[in-house]
Length: 370
Image 1 (cartoon, one colour):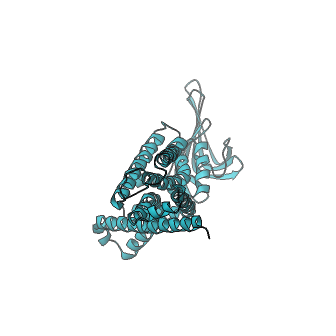
Image 2: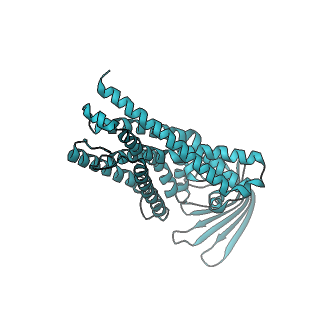
Image 3: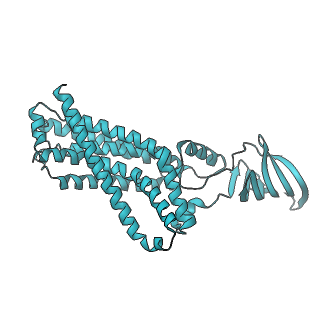
């Protein structure tokens, strides 16, 4: 086995070891602080509810803390090696900056790919369970309540729909408004139930028709049952799911985004969640390489505290950019694609620029030198 292979495996092992330590520490600290903050509320709830809540919070926290742990572990692992003078020994054996970038970058990308799978299979279900427990059992909905309010107003072409309640197989207490291109009321239909029949045709029961004539008069008509065609509709047109977009699976996100657009509902939040499912793990991987690049600057001291502070600073900047980006997306100021991938592109460019600059300036000879 060559010296390069040995160093590659050794640096990768050190990074993964540091990643697990930081990951476990972040998850533990978050859960302990959260439990202490909510203790008074939990004392009044059944133990089974609290246990179910924190099992799902634990699974969710694994996902949420992973990108931060990836980022913090990058610079911390190289700093720990430098503190024991192992970086100097590696450089004496002919190592280059790629000796540190390559294994950490490969490990971080593998962890990011695994995180995407974990989010899809586990974290989405756990996150939705946490929200449902907060809303329905602990009665602490807060802002979460907005995501669980059923959608009642829909728009298809020149027709507005109001569905008072949803039941198995259809809707109850329905009002339908047909409008002219100038937004004048042409017809109103009130029905007891509305169920999909076939294609674009729906079956309505106990109907009341009111047609508004141009001369100010109105015609009324009642029918026990009627089949009415609504162009561009389908059996799933009004099946809008509740809950936060972040906790929807990819297939559901894609489908719900199309359905919402079809019936005139806002879709930017779903598009952003779809992009972030891949952008956030990649951001953690690039953040790890950025903190490694920061250890390459000449004259840097091999202090673990400094490496952690640098990582926290980068994490706060990325978190701030995500919060601002989400606000701009919800306000329809920028495209979801730019909000999700803009920080990733900036982070990748900055990492590449710093890595090339420090490598050219110091030849990697003083990377993290104590």
